[in-house]
Image (cartoon, rainbow, N blue to C red):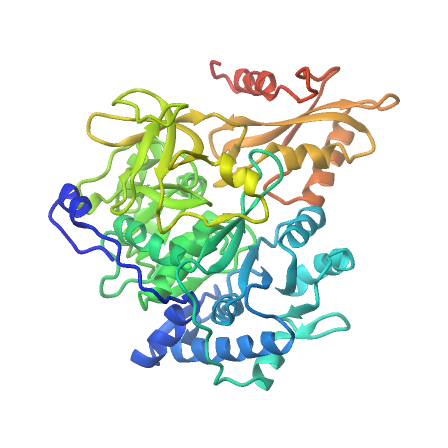
Length: 546
């Protein structure tokens, strides 16, 4: 934890990691507080048309113990992977805590995934059990027969022929379950990357990942926890941003976290939630902040009580940074990280660490530099790759069953990010661009390979390329350039069919919002699509120079 200092330099200089030899995320977010303050509220369930539901730490501890015992009774053992296909809800937190207490590995997955994307992740992770709701159950049913090793499907919405009842399992289980002892490096969760360089990879994290996040979360939430703090994010808890930037740190600090079930982000609804439940600390991705800008007279219409707002996942931009100061009454603290190593750069306006257009300074405890291809730190003002030095508590253990990809992630002891940046004379890091083909859209980092693979599964498509086209609202949108097979003709009807095809099979954030039919596909001598040509073309279409 951060000990407050008068300056950033003193805070960074004096910080030291103090990792305990034994640490379990599940007990840290539930049992610890159940012993100290059992009646303290851990979670609120926001309801637009009524009073919010609530769950105490005592209830969270008791029910997660019961679910851990139930999972063990179903054959789930230490090291087994358990997938969570759930929205923000009490059940999601109960399941997370239970999996960690059991010594198993949580695999959070977004409900918006289509069947192909879901099957790939379930099969790659080798999951033993899946916990989902009615909406996710239909997708799981469609692929369950092809997932080797899958033995249990559990539904929070009740049992049926394939699924067991989540709540009945807890009611029938022993709530005196004793958590297994885990060390900081024991596997706790697997979060899939977006597949920026090939298929999505499972980034395996140890229990220390929560401890590693604490300084960064405290930094951009201006010395969390403070009296009255209450946390919320519209980000999916299946995403590292929602899970590790808000949910788990909030519970670790004994603070209430709000679950808000929005099928999609709506600016007015989000402002209404923050007003009604008096959110004090929010993580709002840049795209969501840009959508809030469309709401007129926020400060007059909504009685907000925000103390801190953090933003990350894509570049915020100076314009939105300046707008938020007047409309929300706080300075946005921008941060930077990746699934493999999150919140290593951040801002803290309370310490004067804040600059529009910059993604922050190194968080205390993390060594970050801009390096060249040989791993040498570059001087001020020179662009290179943003990299993080190991060892680092927030850094991933490995890519699941992929030692080659794990090795390629490092240059000596620098974990590379694939993102280009530069450091200014005051020590702020500025995001310059990318050295891969990642698409950044609405806070999601999207790899083109999975989209292209899905596109070529359409009966009319011969070849395809997916790139990011600059967009003022979403940072980028996915645009697909496709070569049709002989006998097919490109028109708007086929374009709409292709959009639906990808959306149904992958997810609502990965489908191409624009589809353009082209006569040929530029390829390298090894048969790889030269996306750069289409990326430059998309930039010209958006009115930007190459």
